[in-house]
Image (cartoon, rainbow, N blue to C red):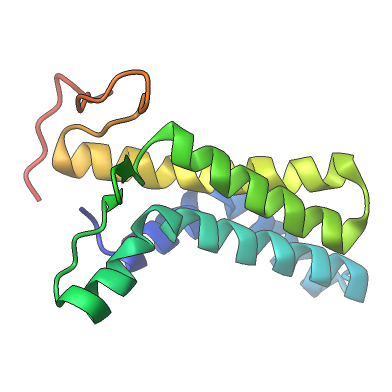
Length: 151
């Protein structure tokens, strides 16, 4: 499992690199308005939270039990596409509250889901198998079955 900082850096430098470039180039050309800045900020916040969202149980497990077990909430695995639907719905709700437009809200949700999936892919590379298809299939499987990475 990569550390949360790795998930955030992967999100910022690989997924939202176009956004970083747009902010920097618009800032140099002085074409960046306050409304644009608020939109970019919302995307970065939602994406950053989405990229560490599967590891949320580690916080309360550390406080309550003194361990960093982070892959389950009760019997539900957090590193699954089913849990990713919750990330999409939460981000879409935030987008709807901010914009009041379902189209923009769903684009915010899709961005959060992309960040969530990047987390799953990084953990799959490092750990070699996640329960992607919970509750349909409860056994771990790996997208990178022929790749062995020792971190």
